Length: 68
Image (cartoon, rainbow, N blue to C red; front, side):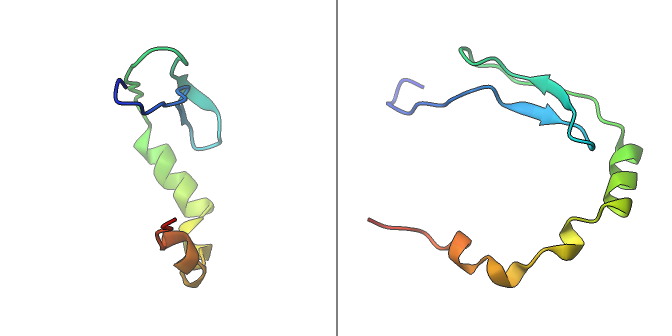
């Protein structure tokens, strides 16, 4: 944090339905730990398969590094 890099903070952990499970502060360093129900995560992935519908062929420009 003292090397001229500024982080905005307020990271959060969201549940499988998008609900906020934990939220970090904006003005101090901290780690968040949350217990997750892995059966619920598995059920959500089964019934709402985001990765199945991804378009990897469209990622080319996103993965290329930009140099000024």
